[in-house]
Length: 66
Image (cartoon, rainbow, N blue to C red):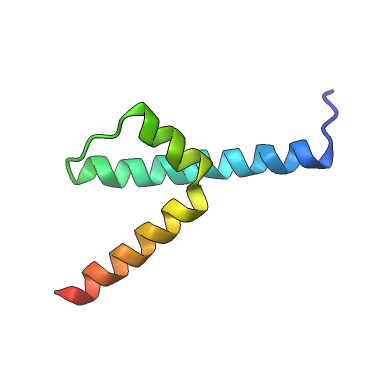
């Protein structure tokens, strides 16, 4: 069995959540006919809290704009 330190565990959880959020955001982007390249995927996974916040803010702005 693999022993993980607490720091490694938190990094692993952060990247797993980033992968899930990245998958969701990429699915939405592809649904709106926008392509995502590998650099954007990596940025979404590593910076997922910022990307998710931007998405939510822009979604709310767009929802109330119309």
